[in-house]
Figure 1 (cartoon, one colour):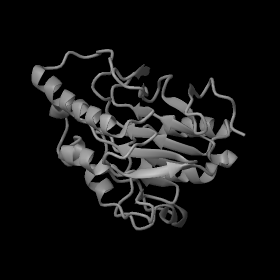
Figure 2 (cartoon, rainbow, N blue to C red):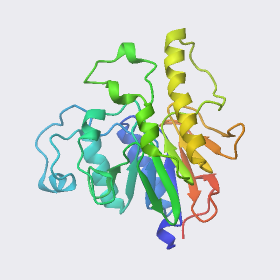
Figure 3 (cartoon, rainbow, N blue to C red):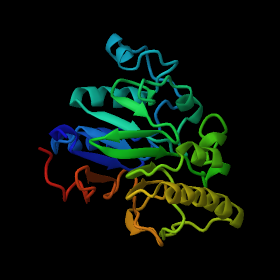
Figure 4 (cartoon, one colour):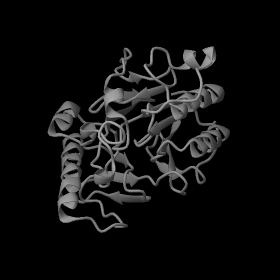
Length: 270
């Protein structure tokens, strides 16, 4: 294992927040880390136009895309400038139609740029000898305020087919967006019973995926809070990452030991 991939950073929801994204990537880079895995609600490829045509350099960053939103272009540019790479799963507030239409590279990732790639649901990969898998998706509890095809897509929810696609071979780290059932979350909203039930059904499916693959670690987001808990009846520790604008949005994973620390607590990368 080389120093560059000995430790990586996990990040919680960013919601297309350009200011937070730039500041955060600069912090990660300054600490010496070069690889980020994002747990979803990154909000790239959002269906909105940017002002004016792309420059040739910008177009070269995201070859072959049908459209470009300002957040995605800026993210690709910052990753290039900082010599960093990012992988991400889909959340609920992501453009699922666009993500599923991405061409795949030879390793099975959806390509936005050479430095920004999507982890399809059920996809497995290895970094530094550690077995990872991605299983994005979650139910939007604010769906009634969103517009289908513009800010909400029915493909957002986790399905039994997604769990089947993941399979049952063991993994070391599962990267999800939702939080598996069994993890206690701080309730910040009182939801109607029907919304509560539908949301929880996705968490039960994710729990099935965890039981099937027995990861040492699960990283999640979605619920906008930072907590780490051992899943009852297992040895799996679930790390729920907080959202943009808050502490607890980042964690450093040591690939040699699977130890997790906050970015502020972790020693600088070699």
